[in-house]
Image (tube, rainbow, N blue to C red; front, side, top):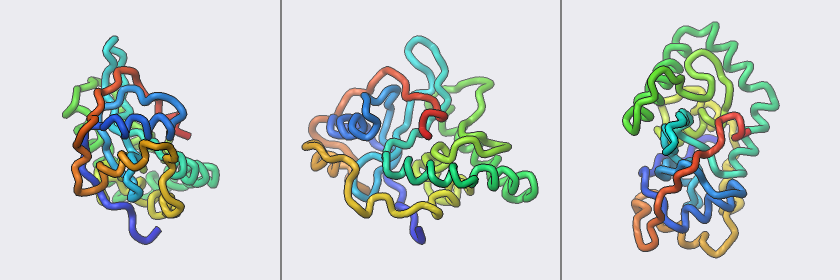
Length: 205
């Protein structure tokens, strides 16, 4: 796509958001802390998760893609060898490698601002390889353009996944529109945060 989706404010999930994410994932969201990005259709497409579960288990994947249409399109890129090509470029291009390491540091800094996970890597294969494009795209959407170079590249390769309308079809879809860019996502029915974790980054594929 020529123009990526614009950044949106990070907001507390509403009840409608939680219901929308349930439909997107086919299960209840776990470890949900915030809506990190909203699709142009108004629904969540990236969530922010807690770094550590109530039982103390670390959960280092901070940004998790929820939109099934975006996830499917990213899976096609992965199947076509984009991760291997990106990893090879990291080994051959010092400037790209430096920018990708900076993205890794940004990811850890954002996670540490919530809770520090000593000794844990960022996610998605950063800083030396590309392991999961879903994670890199989620980081780029949550942080905005110019932070994760390979996440930005992957977004540019994707179709506009929202062009056919919202991936959420049930009655709470209209309520989810409260959180479109610029509205702040706050309002009646603000949901409480779930306490169970999302699955690991490998399960986003």
